[in-house]
Structures are given as C-alpha cells and as structure tokens.
Length: 485
Image (cartoon, rainbow, N blue to C red):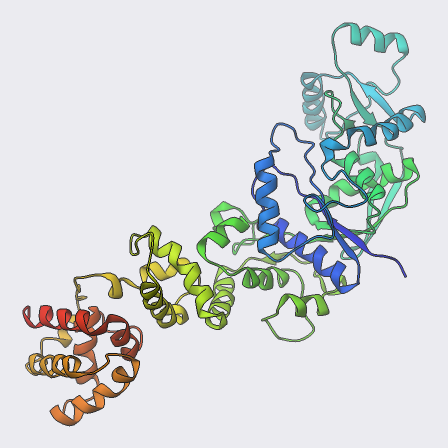
C-alpha cells in the first residue's frame, strides 16, 4: 500500500485566509484518515511580499485550529530545508538539466516588450501568451542582449500540439491544450525560481503523493505536469477543491466580512467550531449530522465526498455552530476567553481577584446561551456592570407605572434584606413567596422587578440576575427606581 503524504505550502505574504485554512484542514484530515503524514513548508519565493512575521501568523493559526504537522517548518524532518528561499541550491541542478536538454531557454524580453506583445494579441482576439521571441536565439544574439545589460529570465519550452491530461480526484478528467499555455518563466531575472517550478521540485523530493489544493491552482497544473514529464518525475495525484463563495455567490472577500482565521479567533470563535464549519464547506458526511469533533472528521473524511460545486460561506451557520460549542464548553474556558473582551470594553480592571473571577464566571454562565461568539458578551452584560439602570421605552417603562409597583418593590427589597443568602436558590423561590403575600402574579409580578433590576423587559432568568447582582446592588437599584416612579 502506498505511503500517503500530503502538504500545505502557504506563501507568507499575509494572514491565513479562511480558504487556505480549509485546504490545510482537508490535507490534514486526508493524511490522518489514511495513516499518512502531513507536511508544512513555506513558499517564500515572492521576496517583496514574504515576511517572517506572516509565516509565524500562519503557523500560529494552524496550531490554534488543532492542525499539527509531522514534518516541515517549525518541526524539521528528513527533507529540509522547508522554506523555498533556503532551497535555491537544490533547484539549480534541475534548472541546468532543463537548459541542457533544451527544454528551457534564456529570455531577454523586457516588461515593456512583453506588455506590448500582450496588448497586440488581445487586440487580435488571441490568447495573450508568450509567443516565443527568445526561443531560438543564437549565442551571438544572446551575447549582444547581455551586453545591453539585460538580465534574462529562464522560460520552459512548452511542447506544441499536446493534450495535457489531469486525472483529478475531485474534478475527474481535465484536459488542456498545450498550444494555449505559452512558454512560461521558471526562474526570474534575479535568479529566484518561481512557484510553478519550485513547487514541483519540492513535492517530488519531499515524496508528496497527493496534492490537495484550491481550484484556483488548477490553471497552474498543466505547467507543472509538463515540468514533471520533462524532468522524468513521477507525478502526484491531484485534487482541486472548489472555491469558497460569499452569500452572494461571488468569490469570498472582505465585503462579505472576516476572511482571516485570526479575525475569527480574536472575535471569540472556538477553534473546534471553526474546524467543524470549514470541514463542511465542500465536503459532506454520509449522515445528516452537523457537529463533529476532529477525531470524528478524521474517521469519516474522504476525497470522494468532496463536492465539485463551490461552497457558500454562511455566517449565520457558523454563528449557530459556534454557539453550540460555547454552550457545552467548560465554563472556565469560556470565562477565560470572555475576560479579555470585558477588560478591553472597560468593564473589568486589569487584575481581578479570585472572588471577582467567580462573579464573572456566573455572568458568563448566565449569558453563554445568548451569544454566538465570545465578543458578543460585551453588548449583553451591561445590566450587571452599570451602576445606573436605564429603563427602556415602551413595555419596560409601562410595566413600572402601575399603582401596585411601589408596594411590590418594597416587599421584594424587604425579602432581599432579610435573606441569609441572596443566591440562585433564593431567586428561584422568592416569587412564590411574594405572590402569596401580595396576591400579585404572572407578568404583573415578574416584569416590574425585572425592569427595576435591569431596565429591560426581557433577558436572562431572574434567579441568575438576582444571584449575580447580589444584595447590595439589588437594594440600590430598587431604591433608585422607587425614588423615580
């Protein structure tokens, strides 16, 4: 049986896009499902845009998602180095081989000349490809061009009239006409190999068996297949996963909301919820279940169930899914995630005591079924932190105008003062006691007290509110309301 090995090879030119995260996840799941290995390397051939900082962001985001690699950058292995710019010496013999076999040649065309050629082809309605100006230069012509100070690129000589076939694990048989490809650059004028060349050398030498990547790379694949053939390399299996679209069925971008993994982490989405959601973007399980742990995803994942159709990123679905994980996660974990947001909003001081932590934990426990992501908690907990209660117009304000309200609040305040403990148990029993004593019941009983304590007609359970506010805050709020009605 083949030893399966896959890779994720991001370019460190920015943050980890949600589409890149899904690609990494699919590779990881495929490797683990089949007892294979998963490698991460860095494609940093774009010297102007690549940075070590971006590399670290990508690495940290992958680890936050629970995606770890068996080999590659940050962990090492037997096929390093794992950054393209550290492998220049490895690429050179293969460049020399292509030049020697006349499968590649030096090209001296300037950017201005290439742009002029492209425009002319477009005006004629032709495919804007390189027409091979430098394909058959003599040594004398090359020498003259170099004397002008031109620094050449190296282009691959694409064979003519060839059908390039790709047996894609997701898309089936895909064919390309070599006549539409054009001789393409494999080494830039600064001596740095381009992605399409470096990637096939790296995949071959690192023994990658399956290349699972986004559909947008499908157009690169015929060039890579030609290079595999020219160098006599065994080709890996290819699987091109459809794009992720926004709700309007256009390519996902900033106008659709957050597109980076880091943004979802910072808003307080749980990593396992993001993984669960990403797995279902383009892959479908055999059952109708929607909530999966990483272990369950590994047990069920297969390329056969990856769809050819684009996946639509549904924020509402992600929020629902994340809310399910928030509800079942350990309360300490959700509290720890909530505290930085509460501090940033100025609701908590920088250093909180153990007692204050326990109080915050009660708030989180009370509110976590009402939030889709952790950052939302800031807009929902003002009723516990604000000293002054602001009564909402409409139903809330109307509920405290009844003539029985002052007496009702007086009785409630008295019970709070007399209680040994103002806790959840007290909150659950107090309304039956007041109902017996006053004869007031239902909405007429609950609503004025809720509004007096929170300013709102709806919200968390009253026993939670009472336990969180505690005796002193309750009495203060009752007194304030009584003095203003």
